[in-house]
Length: 171
Image 1 (spheres, helix red, strand yellow):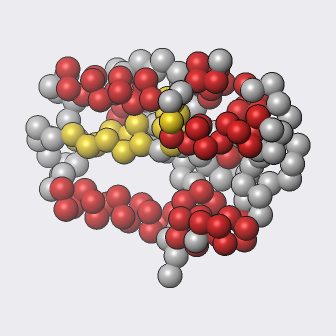
Image 2: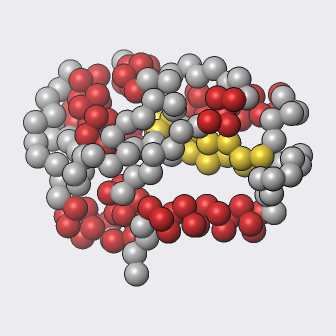
């Protein structure tokens, strides 16, 4: 049985229960959930740069699935913000506020590297064969995440837009 976006949401709910985080009661506990973390010295960009640099990068699956992401400087900024402000409690999402699809991400990464992104999307079946169904579903059925609580606490993003985040990483 594979994971789905619904199962992923349920998994996050189960983690909250295990950790004892009660979203209805403010406690001196914070939890951070993040999507794809973009940084210069590792992570997903390190894996993606070479195929894109060679002109072989592109979207996966339909390319229409959400791809929640955040710049590493914003993720550390949100964590610092929660530590420095004792009134910031509970769960916050470490995601950039601007929504991005996988196809948009692929085009933006190619543009930031001044490379083409003309290949057709990698078919879902190929990704499932390479990664396994359970891991592939996380990439093929992304979730749209809006960081409402993070924004409500007053955190000011350094890189709310994808192109600015990628420019700071690949330049």
